[in-house]
Image 1 (tube, rainbow, N blue to C red):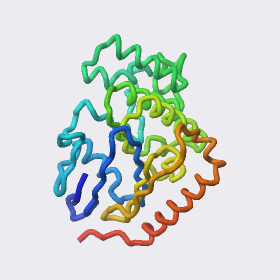
Image 2 (cartoon, rainbow, N blue to C red):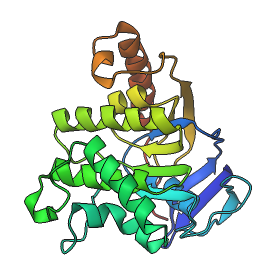
Image 3 (cartoon, rainbow, N blue to C red):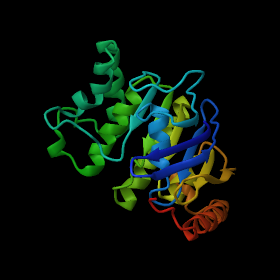
Image 4 (cartoon, rainbow, N blue to C red):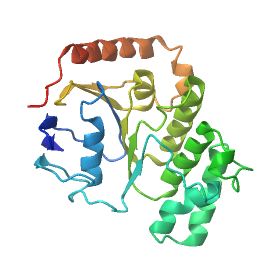
Length: 253
């Protein structure tokens, strides 16, 4: 991404001069004030918004909605209430017309991996919020997309469930090293999971810090909570985010 700018109808400029390169297999998180354009960045990479200014490339090609090398996990689980856990987790591969047998094998392995063995035939109404997010995580990883876009996937969960799912996400990433662009408001989550943390300013969003996370891998998200170096990084990121919060957002013209 280079020199991205984006303005919505009504004159609200979400992004200005936003440039970011992500290496294959890298896990990068973006943090910043609400409304600073974090989700806009994801939607531009996913091809859900047209690029107005600047340039975006996924690999060597321009973004396009529906491309199979990109998977998008949203804050809400977006499960279909009439499908059970296995069917919901297979839905992305069904739309992509992936091999049915391979998809089912992969989904069943992932449902077990996320702690839902025995709940394959359960419907969303029979699952807790955290269990529903586990199904959504299994659905995302079931697709063979090398690029994962994740928009606050654990944002609505309680602290303990967030920690468990963050640990699970880290373990899944360690196995496959897909390229991840992760949006979160949780600084601890961003630091524990990421190779780099990007801090954005108030609207219009721009990058004010690009912080390498020099913590050894593989990591334990829970163990890091007691690591002094982790807390040093947290304090640094927090101070930068405080600077971003002090800037007033640009009002609608």
